[in-house]
Image 1 (cartoon, rainbow, N blue to C red):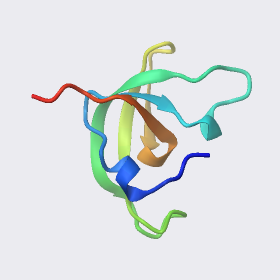
Image 2 (cartoon, rainbow, N blue to C red):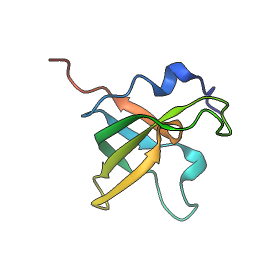
Image 3 (cartoon, one colour):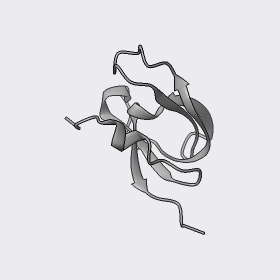
Image 4 (tube, rainbow, N blue to C red):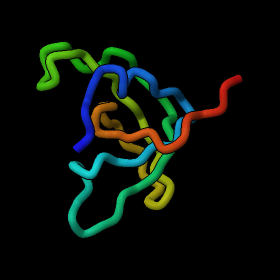
Length: 84
């Protein structure tokens, strides 16, 4: 299982390619891959189950064409967006 630290989920940027954490993937399908289209920093309060605030991300999933809002702790970085 992945070691969750604040460092992991405060490094996301718009344009990053991400995939779902295995913990949230239904057993009847494979993981989705998508692109981060928006990040709202500090959206989730510090009294969450993580004992730390975390960001909310809006992700466009390629295969399903679904747009979904998720806390960054359930998303894994596949490839960072190019730096300008």
